[in-house]
Amino acid sequence: MSKKITFTKIRRRNQFITFLVFFVLVIILFVSMLVNPWYKIPVNWYFIPVLGLVGSILIPRYMGRHYCGQYCPSGFISDSMNHKNRAGKIIKSGIFKPIFFALFIALFVVAFLPWDMGLPVSMTETYWDGVINKLWILWVICPFIIALPLIVIFGLTKGGRTWCNYMCPWATIGVALGKQQLEVNDNCNDCGSCLKVCSQPEVIEPVLGTGGKIGANCLICLKCVDACPNNAIQYIEKK
Ligand code: SF4
Ligand code: SF4
Ligand code: SF4
Image (cartoon, rainbow, N blue to C red; front, side, top):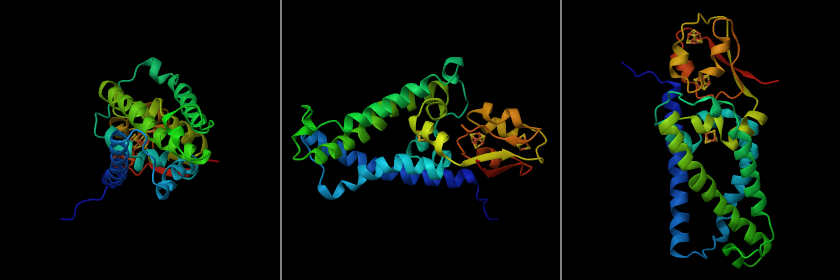
């Protein structure tokens, strides 16, 4: 008997591949910086942080939260932890989103400050060399020094996707720019199977039984689509 291909299997495969690529790149960078703190990125690698910067706008614009649910390397870690949402009122209030978004913008502003500010990366030859080198460092600092510990701490204590649902600055961009959204249709009989697998039931609960758009903060992880016995959840394009 052939095994059923589910969105969950596809998601886990995609996440594992992106996690592996990202992990290898970061290990190379970390080791290089540990061996030599004045490490200068080889010129032909410069396209990576530039792609990262451009991708921070283009990925949320064209993939929206679909990226979060299916491809983000950190999703591999988050989805390996307990999905049950145990976030309290303060976290769910959304107060952390603007704070982390402001921090995210501040880090990029720092990356473009004049290169002679006395930072180690200012030992590079030109302004743009300095900018690119700082972007490299930010790409390590943001996900690994700031985000990763929070992903793991909140993931273990409050539920695997707590960072993604209530804090991540990329999610803020994805929700604002993304065009993808899910909708519950008339087939829904309010059986509740989707609620058991969703990491933030508050986005889907209000439209069960009645039908309607699932909240914009939905990760588009498609776990609910796999769990739904009635084909009641479908994609729509945000207006
Ligand atoms: S919310 Fe942030 S960390 Fe979570 S999957 Fe999306 S981009 Fe990745
Ligand atoms: S509503 Fe569905 S797609 Fe959205 S986060 Fe919940 S389980 Fe994932
Ligand atoms: S699993 Fe499907 S039918 Fe059941 S409540 Fe959710 S959307 Fe409705």
